[in-house]
Image 1 (cartoon, helix red, strand yellow):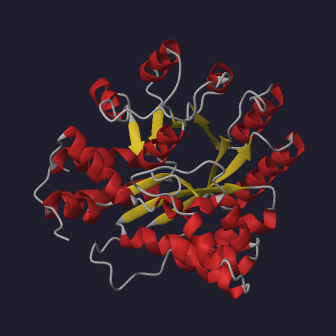
Image 2 (image 1 turned 90 degrees about the vertical axis):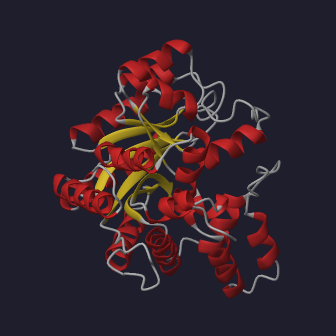
Image 3 (image 1 turned 120 degrees about the vertical axis):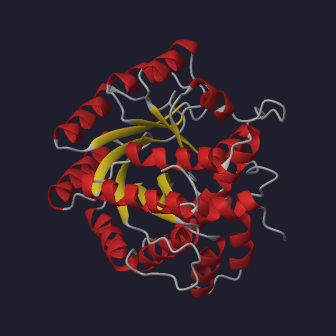
Length: 350
């Protein structure tokens, strides 16, 4: 296929990824390999079932994450393969900084992920025409609504313990669906306070689905960023805009969920267009790139096409994500240098 000038630009553009779940990064190709190694006769069908078509949405009873979990089996070797495969994808897509999130109930598993990052992030892909090296991959530990307070407390303690000696562990994330059944309680708030007191940042999934009723209690803990940010009251939306709380905008993931729930409108599309006009800060993110097969470069292309942006505006949007990241001061300085060099080489204003 013919690649447009903007498509080529978005691919070579240095990019920052701030919302990526390790489980959701695993590609159907890697799942197929792992299942075949287990001798599963249904490996090909399961690998196909985990994929979500671009022009559709996840079907009723979708079990893609369960399939990925069955493929990995929480084996250290497979966890390492998942991390390595994802970081290679980042190299190929021009991503220069990642904040990868995963559950934290197992300290051993978190250490396996960090070790895999150590071994993988320095690897350069000879076939990567973008010439961008992944400068840093930090880790965010996820708390989950449906898990017990004890389990989430363990995750926070593990995050704090690792953060004390490894500053790549940068934050905790509050995630999960069915808030009416598993709300953000005072016990969860205490865990967030404990993590923040230890130097970790707090981010939360927020307004990903209709009917979430605990927005005020989540905002009371002053999250540094919110994930998704689609559905909220006008008052909450005004607060988000006034306080300049950054939204992690996961376009492909949101479109999938909106179609699944019957909320997608071809004419109105995704609200990022309104956010851009309002000046509401947002960063483009993939959420689950392995399942959705929609890389970050294509998120930038979608925004460029729908907002009719030029290369300078797309560059500015990508570079702004650096300031919203939890990268160290040194890494941020290095990232800014990468963006500056890219701008100068492409006739843009850095």
